[in-house]
Length: 590
Image (cartoon, rainbow, N blue to C red):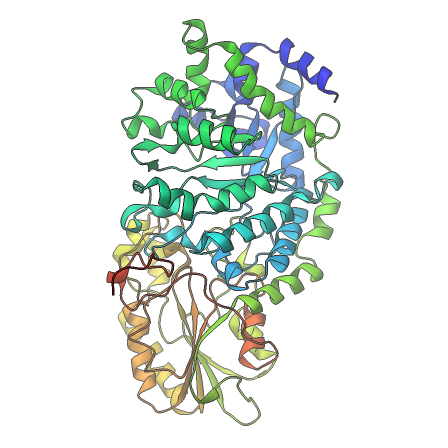
């Protein structure tokens, strides 16, 4: 659509239509094209708002997105297509290592390929915007979301920012890319004490030197969107921070793209004590240059009141809507609202052998050898009797919390990877991933029945321990597959104990006393405290959550087919009391 036609469209839209373009709702509002009363009632919006919604969150799959698009364009007075946005943080269906692992490759060209192939998969499924890269500088491993960041160094994160953004967006012209929405602007990784959603308080020099560079690199690379942080920065919630969004992002950095709130963060302005009600929150957010209200009733219910009572000039809304319409036009959605997606293309694109091969290569380069006493690695299956023990031995859940569209059934377990070298390898579970029932209950994700399945009865736990020790006694080398529960590392995954679970530590202790060679594989989303382990094992491989081809990558490292070339981009502490800890402090007095 020509710019003149786009302007004519904007001028012909009603105020309600304009406001609708600034509202984003999630998939449950669009199920089977029959909008249920429940989600609307819970959010406090009308059916009219749903019909006029400008963008949709986390609806994926060519069939689903085409169905929703057809319905929304039919009920929208000007038949304006919606934008489909989703979390494509380190893969769509083919999952790569978590970004902290991607950082450990020190290979931005390879990471760019990962983001390009992720964009190809996502766009084939109808997704047009990916909420990535996450570019928060991270200094505190207690914070669960460190797994989403490339690491603690602002220079390295800036290099990855460019690689990730261009990887996503280079294919836009051919409809094989997606628009990049970098996050979380700004300084989300500086939350106090590593606590999720906590405040951020830092000097301006620290902000500019260590936290802003990566976001700026994303802007320079041409990112189409930016997402604000859920937290406050120096006392002001980022979602309504005029200095941060207008003065820095828009004016100083000349960012022309869309700014979107994080999930319900405009409504959260009320909880911050920064706004008195939904209307006040809407006013403060739009005056700070916030364009899209993600999953909140504030814009839907507040903006029209502000215009009618004279507190907000409709021209301000026009400026905001123009940015949304411009992205839709840039993506040629008015000509092809499906963005080139189709069920046939999706089947060919997702989990292709080529993408799996790339996932495997990146996982190999992401793995970090933390210890290798007496060159225990690589293993020699012809000369050594090798056993595989641990709760992650047969697990397919190697994807990490934020692989929201990935499926464990598509991933290669460690056992499956090793069987390509040792077809008859003996395997024992040994123990559960974790046995802390209270922790699992507090997460709020599981029913009592599900937790019962995750935590073995005491008699079974004892039996699993005995089987593991017996198998270890019969072996020359023991591979221990240990790690965190995936739900412990991610959003709302802040924790104070950075050690492996006690049940895993106890099993490591028992096996270490047998005098066997021990190789420890760590599956985690953050640096862990390993001081109570290093003297009990011979080799340690930090495997992160390695993704779809994790089992194959780990096996290739173990048996010498691939070189463990990964290098850490975030500091491993000796003790949790050191947190936050990072390498680039200014030099102090000796």
